[in-house]
Image 1 (cartoon, rainbow, N blue to C red):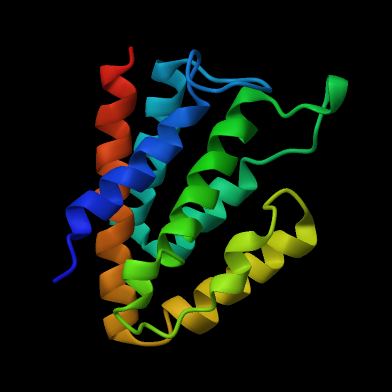
Image 2: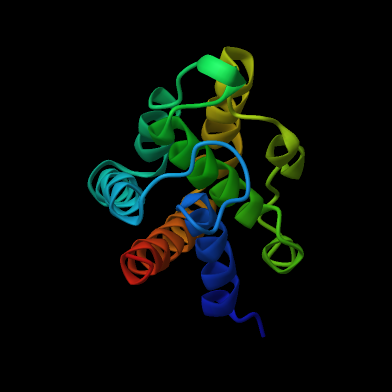
Length: 155
């Protein structure tokens, strides 16, 4: 039996690593900023679905600025997308045999080409069957809920 709560909690903690005091490099965000971005992504997921939430997050990632660093909003959105995609590549999630392409997880999300490949992956592997879509929706929702409360706790 797979403990999905434990798995989603682990990836939610990964999302909150972009918060000040928990992230060793770059431009970390405040816990309230992180909570805001996570809440927006969660709301879009719940209202408009998986694809829309990923499109929203990818649209918030801008090019690197001074000192080759991202702005705080981009940093947070990169963490959210990378952790959600990494969740799908988790060995225990793979044991569900969803047939997802785990190679997409290894890509950086900061180029237009990789953004396009991520969106194609969402369309072709996640939303292609109702079973995949419902499982992934639930995993993403639970992870974002945990991340939201994790960010609030770090405030």
